[in-house]
View 1: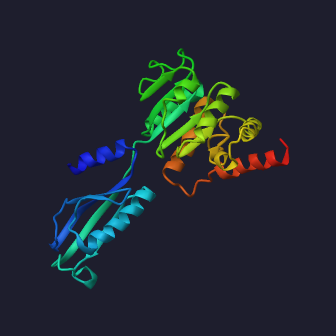
View 2: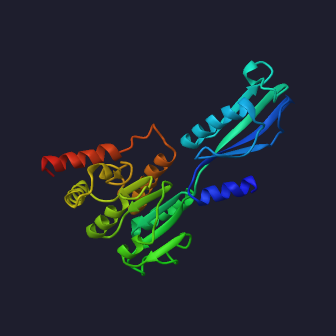
View 3: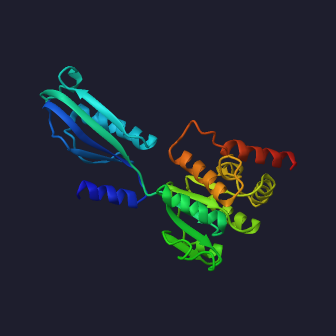
Length: 279
């Protein structure tokens, strides 16, 4: 299969990879400029950049690139380093560009009201595919969400049975009521989604956690949840709340260590308050 077709298949399957491309070569090398090698998340490869020790080092760097989700440039001076003298090279300089191949990022928005609509708009602008789920057809429809990948306008329980988030999925819970938020959260914490966020006050979050724990949901599963959802920027309007939510999601997507993620602090505070019996 063509290497570009391999990349498409990898992304469709919700998997990661890294593409190595020879961008500059000087002297004698065992390959050619523009040669490519795809390293998949299971360690298997497609294509080659010449084999030998260079390829082995590129393979290792490719694994790091796909985890960090950041590109990298590598330079090999084959003339001066004896470890590259494997009989495959005659000498020269080789520059390789490594770029992450990421699966399609899908955002599942539960709720189709004002906040949800603005989250949808911001998500589309930042490259996410969006799936809308609400039990009101007057809100969840193609007129309001024309660029959504899918729109479900039916009972939440019925919709949940049709969804299968993966590790490249993000979930935002902004339904119109506490009961539906809890129903969705009960399902969401059992998925491998990369991000789960739920709107609501701290009191609402505590109440929801208490109920789910009483049903048998493990505290560590609830500790995955970002709730109240969004970075704390003092947001008030639906538009501002949507920006706060998407800022938090983008920080997770880009592994931004400089951003003070609230998940662990907020979730554990909620659970500690539960254990202490206070609100």
